[in-house]
Image 1 (cartoon, rainbow, N blue to C red):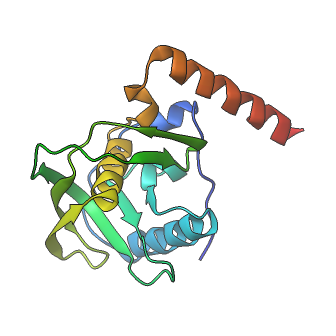
Image 2: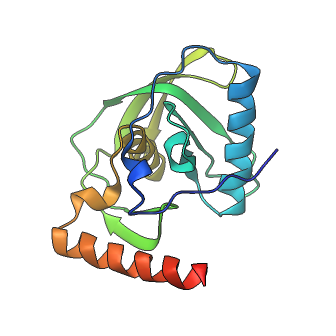
Length: 169
């Protein structure tokens, strides 16, 4: 396994949508394993392939404390199951250090392929529902900061650009 580099906002590569995974291969499974290593190392709970500069419709998540409940979603499709809005802030490994509440359905159903290419459907609620929707946005080239005001988004961008400049020194 290998740790991958996570792209950070405002990197324009985060805006490239993922392409459908035509078949689940050993290469796909290796990418999934590398993504888990990267996500766990970054103390994240979700990671999209587009965040590691791989333009594929694939994301992972795991909310367990002991890294024992990994979920892999290949070519996911989401159906909202409620009009109730989740009252939870979300963050992003590509926008480190920032958290905001967005209006997202509290419960969704996901249809996807697993790491072996088998189709499954699963319902998620609360923070897991938020994560699934957040990661699917990444696959469409959308970041959670896009839902913020231009002022907030610009402030976040400037702070991250400054941090990236300082880290490069």
